[in-house]
Length: 509
Image (cartoon, rainbow, N blue to C red; front, side, top):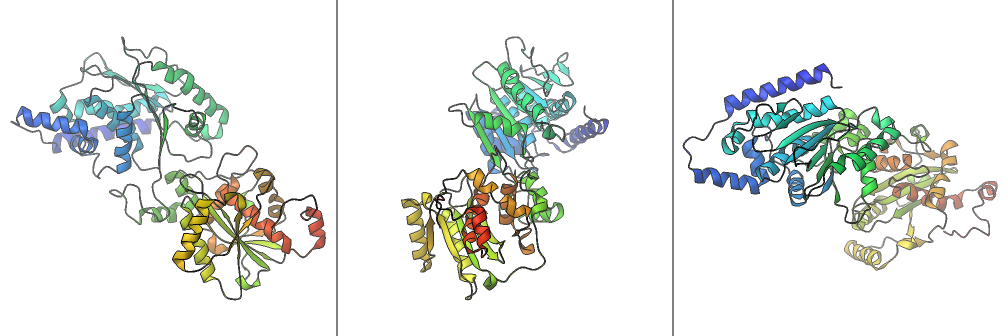
């Protein structure tokens, strides 16, 4: 149930917007019908103009390209199902619940909208913004006429004079009876279903996913069957993510993921008209990196079941680069960097312990990873050296050409070495590292505690468990780097105990 404070806050918000409309909106007087029709035609075609003209109180900042892109995709795909995964503060609710349905309405491309909230009261609050536009927005009323219809204007359910119907529905509530005469819903939006209780209850999440699939979506049976699901991916397991996992691999299903992170690795904002280049860096300093990226960048903070935060040790003293017995950098290659991470992990061995030194863990191109390798090599002191390696399975013409082109560009060789592809299952290999963490044999430098690449690597490590579906590029590279360093461990008893050098072991370095 929505709290009385939430309801009162919404009431005050609507009253304030009504006051602004009455005091600040200037109606066009004595304009020609031709001028008015030209404006309407432009608004129907151009969603950016539509938003800026009809909603000046909302549109204090220019619409972002990703917002316009979503609106166009929704309009173009009348049966599309959209997972709208935008970071916090990017106006996903305003666009999905208000701008896009109203833009479809002036284009006569929507008849019956259903907005689903975490409960019915919250759904009514979400629907109130849309309902208010039909009664308080003078520009909409001027161009499209008065829409309030007596007898069909209730809290959480209304029908306009033009025949458009909108209804609020609570999550899990029976959608039976949503038919309005011969109309069934043709635009459904499930907004912000997740809360602190559902993220702790996978069974409840699965029940809601089933409800969406089998009950809610089944209410739409015409040519127009638009579905939008806005939410940021702030938790390791969400209703939105489970719904996407169920449909993402289904060919021609009409399901699309529209993901936008609030800022990139250099803190450049996605919505440049609203946020400055320093805003999100300030937010990270205030909230902490993990919390900020969870809320704003769809990077849920994974706490870990096998590898835990308590196992990450930052010793007060760290070996110098020339003190390590050996240093290795392993590159886990991703060809495009659009989904997988190019992960380069540098580790050193000192007194039979493993020390993390530096890394590159980003959804970037191979060229970017090579730049990191070159920079690290050039900055390394003369009394130390690093062995660079990557799996032979990744060797192909594209990789070879990229490496050759890069070496030619910098005028130097990187001496990257191919190593045999491990035959053991990846999960088993990565879990092999757990005893090292338990015995406090793995260390991280304090200077890297807030480094983005280090944080991404830890998040991937925390996600490793049986049946995991998270990225594993960094832990995979860690395991292969540490496996290389094991050969330099001086204790013969240790070597015999691990079975690393058994004749039956086919893995070579």
